[in-house]
Length: 65
Image 1 (cartoon, rainbow, N blue to C red):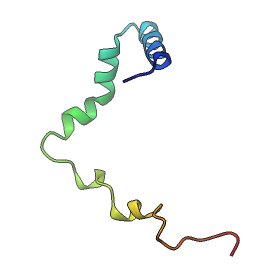
Image 2 (image 1 turned 90 degrees about the vertical axis):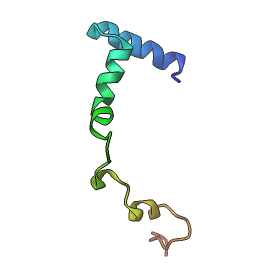
Image 3 (image 1 turned 135 degrees about the vertical axis):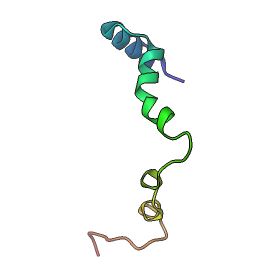
Image 4 (image 1 turned 30 degrees about the vertical axis):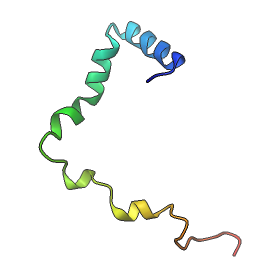
């Protein structure tokens, strides 16, 4: 769901580009809707290391130690 301001921006952009919000959104997500129907390649999966970056129970460096 878009806010009123976001919807107005979307409509203004589409009017300037002579397209519709539906066409703009479909074009924007086409890569994802057409290329991952069977399986998502491993390079697009989140690595577990990335998930640990912001965990509170892990050791982090501090500027004040």
